[in-house]
Length: 487
Figure 1: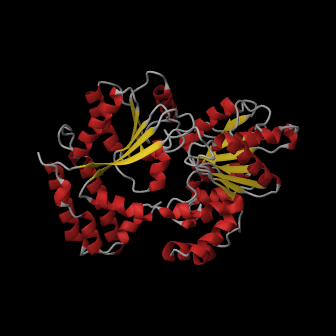
Figure 2: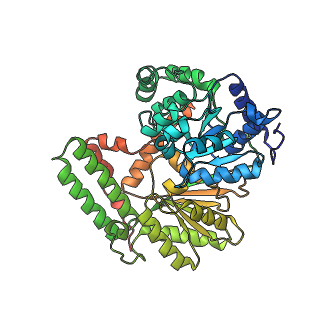
Figure 3: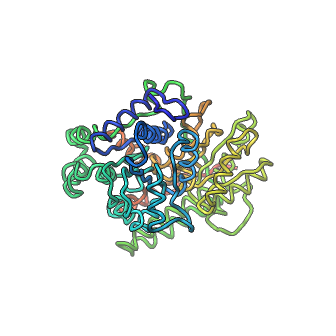
């Protein structure tokens, strides 16, 4: 049951999640709540804090420190005010944040102190001086690199109880799961080296099912994951319909694409090591830009109309969707492309098209989200994948577009789930735009083949591309005859 003071109701699976967290808490064990994005990890944690307060005085409780990305600090504040107004919340963020004894006094007077990963490292001494009752990390994939400064800083914070919240416990490699579990229950999976030898290499390289099952048994008691697609968990969420939208290049795009490929192939034979890897990644970025729009690659401020097959297809689908009274969310990984899209779509649609990116401050971002979520808000919201892919509730949209591909299923799914989450009343249509006959189509096919790793244990970045042979890269980037649309 929801604790006294909780303003709202918990679904049955959330009640079970609360009971699981409370059991681990009472046993002095750490846990990773890895529910699918949108299933309410935030309110399960807030309910735990309220349940902890029942029958206890402030003097008997130590504060909980929550570490999260800067982009979701405001979301935690709003959710705490909405569901658990009795909790005393202190935000440790910004240029005027408290320090020293003043901070320690404010922390002791609070139930929940919220800070960011960046400040966990920068203010390690200030935070480390407080006796915390619990450390919680949100979007725990931020500690996936066990050697990163912010990961070490978070692990160094002392507390008898630890909780990790994440919708993606494995994004790229099993080493990320080790890092999260090392935060929750240090030593559970042994040393990083031992884990690699016993589990990571056998499972990732040799698909060792026995090792996978062994790992699942070890982490199972400390990792709780429920999926939105499981009707036994939640039966009243609408469907998510995913589809690929295949687009052709214009002749201008094809010419630029081939020029970029020729330049790389001429240089790659004479390079090696870091130089070769840098050349491959730089080329991949340029080819993605070409597939988006010639003006994106050239950066010359030239006109947008009629030069990109992908942009033309986006405009066609958007106009059809908006004519039905629907709303849309569009992601791009490039801030430059986001600005181009905003200008073009505002002109084409005759409506405001706001854009959330890394340069937008917290207050402005919150205002954009509130405006988009309101009745009569903008019909389309643009967002960069990094700035808009986590921590936002954008259920006003029932269409999601991935204009260009991050080539990491976990990251794309996380962005999609800004719209496909509790509160969504309509079916959500997700479209991933892919240029046929280009590296976009071929890498999309490769990623689909790699996608099962996370599912088997509980994704992929782009670094692996640099390890391909020259012959494999040539095959990957070659322009097919069907890439160009005939006029």
